[in-house]
Every structure is written in structure tokens, then in C-alpha cells.
Length: 398
Ligand SMILES: [Zn+2]
Image (tube, rainbow, N blue to C red):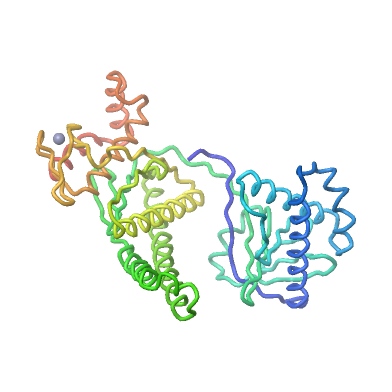
């Protein structure tokens, strides 16, 4: 992942401590209604107007609602962006469902030391208090904020504060490779192999049960309140299990990588091939992909926080090649054997070792060229002591 400026978001529930929550609610309702009006008007036009044309069309009308000049500009720009993207995707007219607004430095003032945000919506001022534990808020104190998002849902007020962070990953001294399956995440950082038990099977059983109910009542589940509630509940619990586990694991592995000066290596999600034959496998595949995506997101966000480098590896053949002699591995269940050199290990261990090897190769330069191959050995020796020898030892012992 390249260095540069990234965003990190503080998300929390908030309460109104100055001003009236009812007024705030109405401000958001009016914002939504006005944004929709502009979208409706734009949708009817043959061509999307340019910014100065849009300004002429909407400025006067929006000012009447009490929005200040820069907010007016935000409103029609947001509407133009939404309509443009819907038309280019040949989608239907966008409808604004959320009670939501986005504020910048002109309408908001963030003060993390007393956990408050002052905001102006139309002509009224409000002070919001962020409700979250101090330790969490502390992590954002040194950062510069860029935007504040306010959302009202089911009687609760939510804020997200977007911060800019500079990500400057260190130069790694080694690699920790991760291979994911539903039961375990296997890490390999030569010569150590570690298995972290996931909670994904638990999540899977909840998801499978929800899908079972949906299949049993193919039409009714959407309309019957009781069934719908049950289905939603199961999906939500499944999701939460995955998210919470991923967060916990991401923190652990990122801190470990930082302690050793390692880069974290993962399979590139975009290059993973679909692999399922029946419906049952499809549920497993869906959850695996979801879990993998969440794990990747969690690791990236932790990596940005701690300036830990992350690399993505093409997953092609990571579990089918022998890490020792490059022959094809044959599997009995999850257990793999190389007929040529006798190497044997679990599928996930083979995956993790191969990911690790791929990264090492990439660091050494162009893979496959013989001059580079010897350079790779030297580099590995320099950076991690007797890494290659350690590697051989590990391979023997499996
Ligand atoms: Zn082999």
C-alpha cells in the first residue's frame, strides 16, 4: 500500500448539549427535502448543467430555506454528483433516505479535549457531545479533521469525524504472511507458524440459519414481521461476530508486525477466483469473502494508524505449489503432499509459506531471473539473519 494521505474516521453516538434536538431534527429533514428537490429538478433535464448554470438555477431557491451560501453550493454539487453517477450507471433516480448532513470548517468546530462539536445548521447553533470512551478519542487528538458527518437514525444522533492522516510505513526487516480460511488465520514469519482460531464458523452458522429461513419462506419472509426480524437479527449477529473478531485480530497482528519491523502480507482479494459447486458452498464462499474483506479493511486501518507496511500478493497457485520444490501439491482433504520432494503440510500452512516466499521474491526484484534469485538469498540473509536456512528447517519439519 503506497504512502500518502489517508483518512481515518472517528465514529460515535452524540447527544445535543446546547440547542434543541427537535430543531436539529427538522434542520436535517429540510436538508434532505431540499436536496431531493434539486435532484428531482436535475433528473428532468436533458443535460446536466454546469456549475455556474446550476448556481443560477438553484441559488435563490435554496437561500429562501435559510441555508448559507457555501451550504447552498454543497447542496447542488452533491445533487449533481448523485444524478451524474446514477445516469452514467443507467440507474434510477436517486432518493435521499438518510437524515444526514456533511459539514466542513465553515460550519463546525471540533474540540476533542472536551469531546464537543459545535455546529451550525441553517441559522441555528448546536453543541454536541461525543459519547465514546476516552481511550478511543485520544487516538485522534493529534490529527487534523476534515469533515463532520451528522446522521439521525431511529431517535439517535451519530457523528463521524473524518481525519487526515499521513501514512509513512517503515522499511520492513521481514515479512509476516497471513493465510485465511474459515477456521483459522495462519501466520508465517519464518520459522514460526501460528494458528489463530477465528470465530467465522460461528458467524457462518448464524448466516446459514438465516438463509435457511429465507429459503423455507421464499415470499413470506419479507412481509411477515416476525420472520423478517429473525432473519435480520441472524444476519446482523453473523456480521458483528466477523467485524469484532477482525478488529481484535488486526490489532494483534499489526502490533506484532510493528514490534518485529515486519510487513504484513495478504492475498489480493481482487484476484481470488470463485470456487464453489453447490448452494451450500456458496454461503460459505460469501461469508469467506465478507470475512476476508473485513479482515483486510481492519488490517489496513490499523496499519495506517501504526505506519506498518502492507503488501498484497497474487493468490495464484499459493496453495497448489510446493514451497520447497515448486511441484504441484496433491491434497487429501486439507492435507497436502508433494510427490516429488516429500514435503507435507496443511493447506493453510502451505498457503502462508507461499505468500511469504512471494513477498520475499518481490522484494528481491524481478521473480524468476537467475541473477536476481541469488540476490534474493543475499537480501534475505542481510535483512533477517539466516532466514533462508530457517526456512529450510521449517519446511523439513512439516
Ligand atoms: Zn516439493
